[in-house]
Image (cartoon, rainbow, N blue to C red):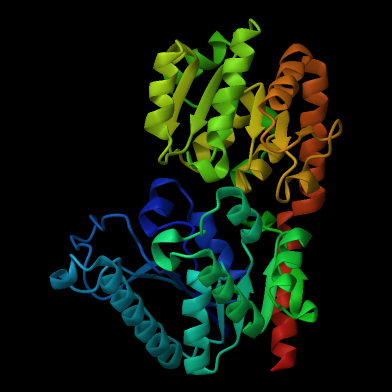
Length: 412
């Protein structure tokens, strides 16, 4: 009976419930390889309204399904330290580590896995060292690329300086028992930080994709929302799915819309997600007179996403991560920047259109070509779906992940 402690900050428990992301938790059992899983979010920022608790206090532990426990870290430990936010957060994180150490020892957890080599990695490493349990680190991105692009740390509120983050990555990756990454570029990043190449394994995240995205696109009905179905029939649509933040270059999609509008195209832009750029882009839509062509839909659940993707004309992917794979499984025509790992899935002229990073003119050209040649767009979308299954087949990726865990068992 194997047990796993899984530390990840991708989604809070409230976000998982609101967006129908139950699959994200269920897949951590790896089809029964782990009988029990403790999922941990280090700083669960969403208000915990369902249990009536607040921002401050010890970590919360909640059973969310059979064999699945969720531990919710909090942004502060004591209300009296509310004005000393950084100190309060550090105290809260220390409290979380104590909780995790006790849990690992009491429940005899076999493996600790973390979703990034920064905050989650640091917490995981401390817990692993204090309990003697092996640590698996998943590299979630080329952080050096992001820092070069933004000039800022990945987690500026926590680590303040880029060099501090880089040192944390070196410590965590250099001491991990095993490392998994969904891209060879991410593995190269890890090796550059001191990771042992023999401990690095390519495991793509196909099994994280909600099964609804695997359904044949022709069997996915338009979302049963009158204003959405009416809008989809009114004009051709570009689609962006992701956080509305500068890091993801969400603003570039609006640049593309403006370029196409100046060229006489009637296309509109659907934005799904939220973030700091939401209000500025809403204001921009009003300023340039494109309010009727932009739909800001906020966060949506997996059912909505899986049903809307096949009914748009073009998906724009400046840097969208998992949403790019969801679009490919939906056989959507895609225009993507040749950035990060996106070129591994999108092959220019074969599975989509790949353009230079931050070149909004080229992205607009690609979108226009797909809008004007629907047969070409359809062909690209179908081949993209085929490649997505070849690269990211969920069953194969689950088996590959299990193999990594068995390698770890053999080494112990």
